[in-house]
Length: 137
Image (cartoon, rainbow, N blue to C red; front, side, top):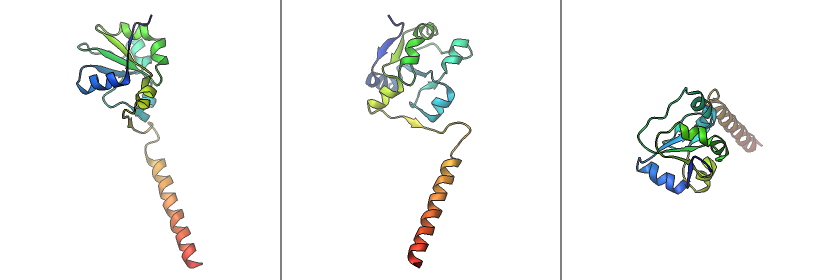
């Protein structure tokens, strides 16, 4: 039996909105940077297991990863990091999104928005050229 009790995305959303839980995203920093649940703390599993990151006491903790598999595989280690109640978000981030709940999107470190800007600029230049050539011909 898992040391982490499952909570549905809807239940986690309600508790998070009321400030009744601490939501911990155990995915690696790059994954968190690309998309995450608003209010979730980024504490990569590698940091938690090594002791580099600590979870503050005070309220129940809900752990999540992308699908729930990574969290379940390390549930005993994660539960041991919490002095109170510990839970797992059913279905992870994927389950959260399937429930129609919002996520925040960022950019992957090192890439920023520059590549997207360049693609957009190139598309605008191309459209301008097509428009000019169409009118000229």
